[in-house]
Length: 415
Image (cartoon, rainbow, N blue to C red; front, side, top):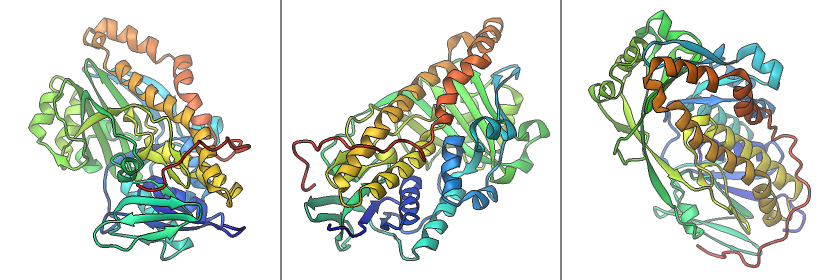
């Protein structure tokens, strides 16, 4: 590269990949996205986009489009698993905007994915290439080659951003072993049409039901027309880490027998209860390898107990785009700087998510009087601010992207 704008290859068309592409295109940097799926379709269920994520999506020009499909819940609350007693976790809506300068959105993953896809294609109509599975890469001082499967021709560019998710093939190709451990926790998840629920069950709030060895999270998505359900259970041996493995209503009911009628009603209303194993991973200590860099779930997959997975991907994308724009002729340096700026925060979130599960599932919650004292203490307002404000105050738009560290001694040239 000799002063020209770089051409970035993004492997993966999920939230991390599309947000990265959009952030780069809006800075005048050419991008092509290679997605393994034959079509970009609605997958997954609900997401929570905190102000640390929403302020970035607004900066990318997406406020109007997201507000057409999201739900701005009034508050989040904690409820006791069997009695339904309620404690306020924190206010959302106007309070969130006043405190953090941006809204808290609950949204269907497919809806936000569609918004991002449309925004990328508006910037570059031929930016997204489907049915292109990234299998490996080669790099040298002149650029990179992304190797695709299925008989697809290799593609060439100046750098690769690997946004190919928790089961990243490119992470493996870079020589990073996927060291996993089963947490002993699984989740039920699904969506419930609002018209199947009683008024108590379809209030516009996010609810964390906490109980001994399990918890349930519900919140509205798609303008309040659907409710997202996640029921997390300890001590199960379900091993499959997938969003598309279906179970039965009876099995789900059995995991939450004796829980409050609102929880039972929500389970009854599920179209399909899907089963999802929670697989743990230690945070990586390195993401950047010359002109190749991991991003999003490919480098810091997390358990969902702080609701920060999508937010971390969005933050990554904006910081990545800023680093590349600041050093367009030194992409390996830009990637090292990106890693420096993001690794401490994302590692803290990954570890904090694991700790939060223990709080939700404390065995003491089986004793009513002790449970009331426990919830009152653990969700006391000052403790809540300590646990959450640092997440929401972070602003990827203003992080200092100053000097870059020196290059490591050697980088992988092919994989």
